[in-house]
Length: 237
Image 1 (cartoon, rainbow, N blue to C red):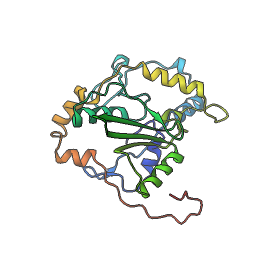
Image 2: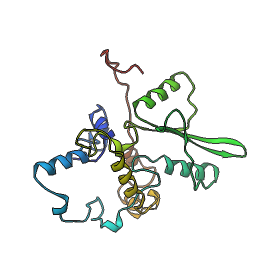
Image 3: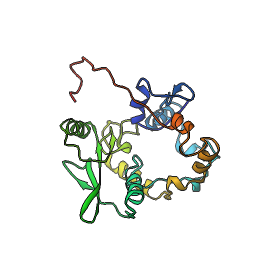
Image 4: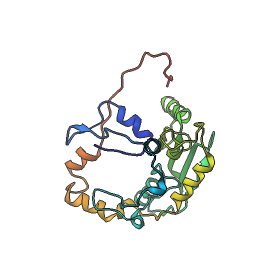
């Protein structure tokens, strides 16, 4: 059983046909959000001050606090920055150390570009919230899709602002709390995923190499068309 702290995973878990071929089982069958953890603690009258700090359990070893690392990016949600920098290095031999986001219609719809010899060679975008996702889909249908990669998140402001996270009593976003969580995240040490010795060992010992059939069966997802709903309340994409 897989548990994860994520709002987007709630939608992912609910989709039909998202299975792991190797084990013929759902990739995610249970989602536990941080907001639900807070509710459970309140029901049990448990305070964070009363909880004993223990190591974080992982597939490899128990992780101490000093071992917790993050991937490249401004927030905890997406991998756009890491993929952008990796693509710049692998495809064009360029080190994109600093990334500048350009806001488009709003702060949750931004784009990033890489130029070489006066030509735009990479064109990435981040679309957060269903309004921006809908606009992106409409552009795609009209043939006006200019991007090589788009990072899509259901929650405006990203995952930390999701409904699955801890909320204020009135259910409205707490901007001060959001800023505090983002600040806590940015001080976590940075480590590129491909330099993680645990990941390298997993590919070597369990997945039988980078391009093996086991990698395809275990890590790659296939999608199938979803039947069109007749519900008049559905958003027209």
